[in-house]
Image 1 (cartoon, protein in one colour):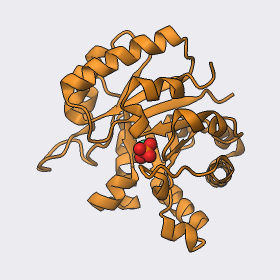
Image 2 (cartoon, helix red, strand yellow):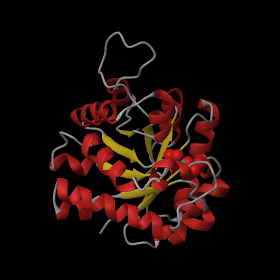
Image 3 (cartoon, rainbow, N blue to C red):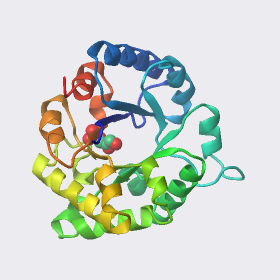
Image 4 (cartoon, rainbow, N blue to C red):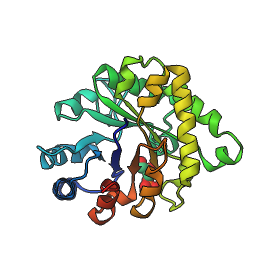
Length: 252
Ligand code: 13P
């Protein structure tokens, strides 16, 4: 049984004080709603201490949106997993398409971050997904295969328990265009088949695969009803309680 996993990715939104206030309200609303999914919020680095403090004692997991692929050293502007762990942060989103597109993160760089996060006993939400050009060029499966094969290279079968995959088609992110539940489900089924080939049927069946890309209250139920969709990674709609709570409590 795969437990639904709903995550909010704030991207570069919310100051530390705004984030802490919002997170506290979210923790209260989550409890009041009796929502029983796994829930995470991915916050900007500087928000992490205040947000972690604000949700203390709740079930909300606070995650970083990125991290360095080194533990320390001369890497100006970077944040080490050791720094995150010192704040009690044990989950990290890696390989987001915005990191790939705007900051030149390759599958190899992302893989080095995945391996380091695992070595530091952190949980990883690894994002994969194709651009519109790749989809229209018939390259969906090729792109997902490469992102998974390279992104997960060196990750042991045991460590797959630390991995969640987020399928985020780039053309659906922040555009209001959601993949149809059928298209998303079929991409998720393909991801599961790659993981089965790389690992085992058991690992593939237990893998949590989130969908991300314009998830909102109005489409979450249809997406989550699909066999291979186990959760959501939500951008814009994770920034207000009015929009995020119906997603978190989709099964209520
Ligand atoms: P939107 O929900 O704003 O489309 O963003 C999706 C996303 O990129 C989450 O990581």
